[in-house]
Image (cartoon, rainbow, N blue to C red):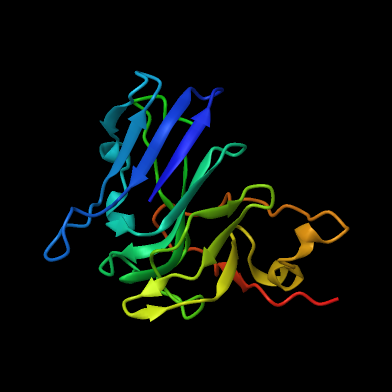
Length: 212
């Protein structure tokens, strides 16, 4: 996945790319890499391999055909679902999960970066999938899984994933709240995830049909 990041306060202007696939359809390589296309150095951009700054790339493994988005307020990048590495702990070849990374120090070439798992790749619901669009509601801090595929299976469902919302707080979630007359209460981003560790049970809410 790839996402454009423009953050003047932290000196960022570019595109971050996670994973991807070598060209071709048979015997191709899926990458366990992170690249930064830096527009701050030239109008055309300069590619920089930042994979080595992540001490735990083995925890997230290779990735492709997932979604990602950047929250400019918290300076956190989210990556969710897609084809993934089934050999990593709690991994799956078609991911249901999500990861995050604090990019506030991305502009400092000497600063280390760390992936944090916020949802396991292997879940019963929502079903693991790939080829989903990167749709992110930054105001309410929620990630969307719209459709997608799992091999030949095509999905038509829609899920709203709330990072940082777990336990009893899940029962009060209303995915239609932002569209009602009362203002929605933004979900608080996760701050307690253990780098590369096992997260609390993530919250994914299937979007119901609206009622009067």
